[in-house]
Amino acid sequence: MYVGVDCGTQGTKVVVLDPDRETILGEGYAPHALISDANGRREQHPEWWTQAFVDSYRQALERSGIDSRHIRAIGVSGQQHGLVALDSHGEVIRPAKLWCDTETTPQNAALLEQMGGEQGSLELLGLTLATGYTLSKLLWLRQHEPDAFQRIAHILLPHDYLNYWLTREIAAEYGDSSGTGYFDIRTRRWVPEALELIAPDGRLTSALPPLLQAQQAVGKVSSAVARLLGLSDNVLVASGGGDNMMGAIGTGNIDEGVVTLSLGTSGALYAHSNRPPMQGHPSLAAFCSSSGGWLPLICTMNLTAVVNQVRGLFGYDLDRFNQEAAQAPIGAQGVTLLPFLNGERVPPLPDATGSLLGLNMQNLQPANVCRAALEGVTFGLRYGLDLLRTSGIHCQEIRLIGGGSKSRLWRHMVADMMNARVICPQVGESAALGGAIQAA
Ligand SMILES: Nc1ncnc2c1ncn2[C@@H]1O[C@H](COP(=O)(O)OP(=O)(O)O)[C@@H](O)[C@H]1O
Ligand SMILES: O=C(CO)[C@@H](O)[C@H](O)COP(=O)(O)O
Image (tube, rainbow, N blue to C red; front, top):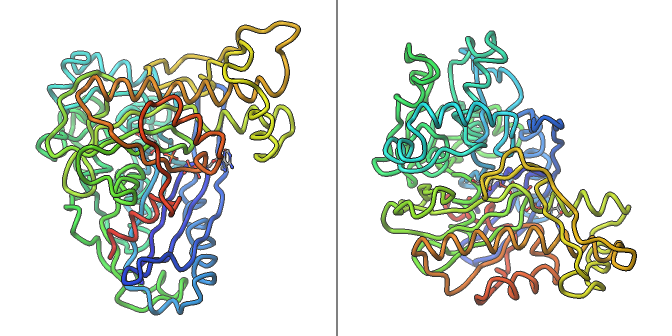
C-alpha cells in the first residue's frame, strides 16, 4: 500500500492507496492555522504541517483498516513557493512565508527590475518572476531579519521540508523547484545569478539542495518517524512535488489536451506540456511537472478564502452559504465582487484590495453577496483560462478538484463559465492521490 500526503494551505490530507485494486482505502484530514496580517503577511510554522501530517496519517490509516507495516512508500505534495529556511543543525529558523504572502511585493518588484524586467526574467529563468515566488522571500529576510538570514544553511520548499522531516535527507525535485525564481525551467538547473542578486558571496547558492528527477526516491523514512507512525524500516519516500504538479498526476493530466482546475485556497489552472512552454503571457507560469514534462499554470490568490470570509460575515456554514448563493439569480442582481482580498497574482495586482459594486436598496442581500463572491472568484479563473487558451494550450476537458469542487452550485458555475466539458474525478483529493501514485 502507498500513502499520499498533500500539505495544502488550509490543511493536510492523507490517502492510503491500494494500487492493485485501484482503491483508496482510507483518507484523513487535519487543518492548519495561518499567521496573517493586513500588510500581506501570510506565514505558517512548519511544525504545524508535521503535526497535521501525523494526525491525518493516523486517521487515514485507521479508516483503511490496514496495519501501518504494510505501507511501502510515501509521496508528498506541498503548497508551492513557501520558504522554509533551516540552520546548520537542520532546525527551522522562522515561520515559513507562503505562496500567498504579499508582504514581499516590494522585494519582488526590486528583483524583477534587477533582472531586467519581464524580458530579463524570461531570459534568465524561462518565466516571469511573480510576487509569491520564493526568491523575494529571501530578500525580505535579508532586509527585515538579518540575523535569521545569516543563519541560513538550507533553503527548502514546504514539500522538501516534509521529505526532510520524514527521511533527514535534504533534496529537491524539478517540479516544485521551478516555482522558486532561482531555477531555469528549460535546463532544469538552479540559477546562482538569481540568488547572487541577494547574496553576491554565493552563500545562498551553497544552501540549495541537490535536485532529483521525478522517479528518484529521496530516501527511506528515518527510524524516529518509522517509530512515530508505526511504519516498517524500509519505507521509501518518493521525490514528491508541488501540489499542482501532484494534482496533475492525480487527475491523469500527464498528456496534452486536458486542463486541471483546482478550487483550493488558490485557484489554479494547469495543463501538461511535452516541451518547455513558450511564454505567451507574463502571467503564465511556465513550471516543470513532477512527471518529467512541463506544467504551464495560472494561479489566482483569491478563491475559497474569499468564500470563507464572506460566509463568516453572515455567520453561515458552507451548506448555508451554498443555499443562499443558489437562491440568487445569475449575475446576483447586479452585485459584483472584485475579490482581491489577498492582493492578486493573476492579474498581477499584489497591492489590490477587493470592491463590492453595483449595490442598491433592492439587491443588497446576503444571497446576492454570496453569489457575487462565487462569480467574482470564478471569473478570475475564466480570465486565467483565456490566458492559457491564447498561449496555445488546448482545453477540451477540465478536471475539477479542490475543496470548492464539493459544491454542486460551484461545479455548475464553472461549467457555465468555462465553455468546456467539466468532470470531477471520483477521488477529490487529487494532489494526495498524485503523491500516492508517484510513490507506487
Ligand atoms: N461544499 C463546499 N462548498 C463550497 N466550498 C467548499 C465546500 N467544501 C469545501 N469548500 C472550500 O474548500 C476549502 C478548502 O479547500 P482545499 O482544496 O482543501 O484547500 P487547500 O488545499 O488550499 O488547503 C474550504 O475552506 C472551503 O472554503
Ligand atoms: O502558488 C500556487 C501555485 O503557483 C498555489 O496553487 C499554491 O501551490 C497553493 O495551493 P493550494 O493551497 O491552493 O492547494
